[in-house]
Image (cartoon, rainbow, N blue to C red; front, top):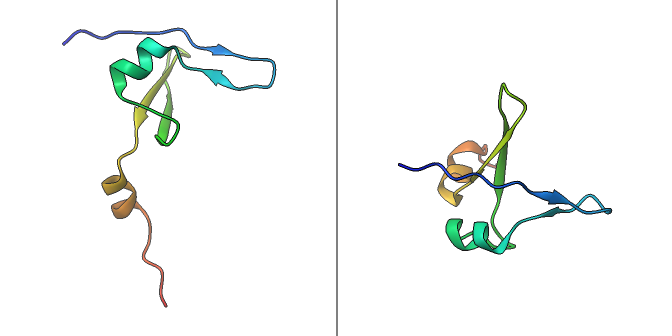
Length: 63
């Protein structure tokens, strides 16, 4: 498996800009929930949080 990396830009308002190539490669869009992982070397890795992961991680609400 080849690991690809991108350098992301943060604009003056603090918004992270995702390159179109990254969005095409990952299939992410405006509705994608991402989890940020800060690595030991100071870099950040992102991974998509799937709805099924949220369903098992959130406590059930009582009615």
